[in-house]
Amino acid sequence: MHILVTNDDGVTAPGILALAQEMRALGKVTILAPDRNWSASGHVKTLDRPLRVKEIKLDDGTRAWACDGAPSDCVSLAANGFVEEKFDLVVSGINSYANVGHDVTYSGTVTAAMEATIWEIPAIAFSLDQPEGNTAPVDFMPAARIAQRVARAVARYGLPKNVLLNVNIPFLPADQIKGFRISRMGLRVYHDKLDRRADPRGRPYYWIIGESPTSVPERGTDTGTLAEGYVSITPLQLDLTAYQLMPEIDTWDWDSDATPTP
Amino acid sequence: MHILVTNDDGVTAPGILALAQEMRALGKVTILAPDRNWSASGHVKTLDRPLRVKEIKLDDGTRAWACDGAPSDCVSLAANGFVEEKFDLVVSGINSYANVGHDVTYSGTVTAAMEATIWEIPAIAFSLDQPEGNTAPVDFMPAARIAQRVARAVARYGLPKNVLLNVNIPFLPADQIKGFRISRMGLRVYHDKLDRRADPRGRPYYWIIGESPTSVPERGTDTGTLAEGYVSITPLQLDLTAYQLMPEIDTWDWDSDATPTP
Image (tube, rainbow over all chains, first blue to last red; front, side, top):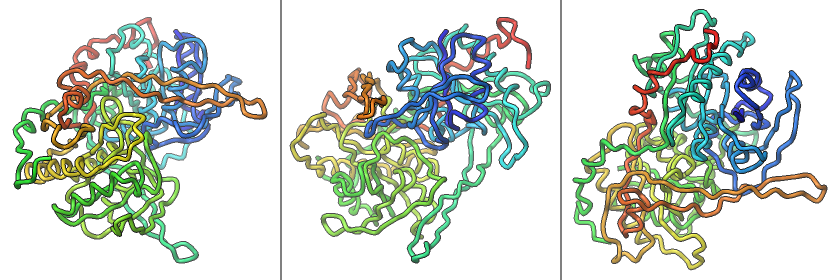
C-alpha cells in the first residue's frame, strides 16, 4: 500500500508526524502537505499560479514535501503524478481540533480527503477534539494509533466511490476511549461576530471573529458521539443533492407573479 | 425584501450587475462581492487577517461594496452586521460557467450560497453554461431574467433549513430554453494534469492544468438537464452524511489484524 499523508495545519505540525509514523505499519508513506497553516481554507484548486514543492526533514528525520498550495492542491499534485507511484489511500490530519457539523466544507483537513475521493482514492480525515484554549502540549500518538486501526479497516473493507470517512477522536487518555461509533453530521452553532476597527489613517477594516462554535451534542451525531467518549466515524458523500426535496420543488410554479417567460 | 447579491468572478464582472438589476424588481438590493476573481477558491472563512471593504460604482452607476475576502467572507460580513438591515435572500452569480457535479465544493459561487445557508438565510447560486473558449461577448440579461423567476419562487415557497438551490442556465437564446427542471448533482470527469517546469534558476515548479472537465450528461442530472435545454435546479444540502452506508460500516471490525486496543 502506498499512502499519502497530508494535513491543513502545515507539514511541520505534530499531528501529521504522528499520523505518518502509524501509517508506516500499513505500507509506504509519502508526506506532501502545505508549508503553512491552511485552516478554514475550503476546497481549493489553484490554477492561477504555479505551485512550489520543497523537500524538508521533519523532527524525527522523516523526509516530507512542503507545498505552497492548499491541502487539496497537495492531493491533486499527488493524484496527478507528482511522484510516480500511485496512491492507494490518502489520510489527512491529525487536525488539532474537531471537524464536525458544518465545519466539513470549510475544513482543509476534510476537503483534502474530498479531493482524493474525486480522484477515486479512498480517503480519511482525522481530527482530535482538543478543547479550545488548551495550552498543555498534546500527544498525538494515541489518536494516531486509532487512526491506524481505521485505516486498516478501510484497507480491508474498502469504501464505495464518492464516499470518504470523517473521523473525530475524543481528547481522552487511550484507556478512557470507549470504542468506535458510526455517526451522522451534527449541528454546530457559529457565533461569529464582526469587529469594525479604524486603521491609523481612520479607514475602516473588519475582523471576522470566529468564536468557538457551540456543538449540539445530539445522540447519534459526530459531536454527540465525541461527548459520549467514542471515536466518531462519519461517512460523507460528495453528492449533496437534497433528494427528499426534489418532488416538492417540482410542484413549484415558475411563472408566479406573472413574470414574463424568458 | 432585502437581497444580498454576491459572486466569485469579482464585483465588476458583468454577470453580477445583470443579476442585481433583475433582483431590484423583488426588493432592496445590496451588492457586496470580492474585488477580484475567486474561482475554485472553496468555502473560506478568513480569520487570520482583517478584511477591507471599499465602496465603488459599477458600470451603470449602481453602488456596490468590493471586499478583499472570499465570496463566503462577503456573505459572512453581510450576515454579521456589515450593513444594519438584515437580509432575506442571498443570490450568488451569475457565474460565467456552469457549476455542476463535483464543482460545487470548489465553487466560490456555490460556497457563498452555502455560507448564507449556514446563517439561515435562503440562498441561490446562479451559473451560465457558457462553452469554454467562447470569445463572443456574453449578454447575461436573459439568464438574469430567469434568475428573477427562481428568486420569486423561493420567496414565495421558501426553502427548508440547510438547503440551497444550485441553478445552472443553458447558454441558449431565451426562446430556445425549454423550461425548468429539478435535477440531481451529476458527474464531472476532471482531466487535470501536472505540468512540471523549471524556473530560470533550474528549480522546479508545478502548474495544475485544469482542462475542461467532461460532463456525463445523464438524464436527470444537472449536466443532463442543461444538455436537454432546460434550466437545471438542484437542491443541495449541507448534511453530507452518507446515511445509506452507515449500517454497513457499523459491521466493520475495528480490531482487525490484531491491532492493539487503544
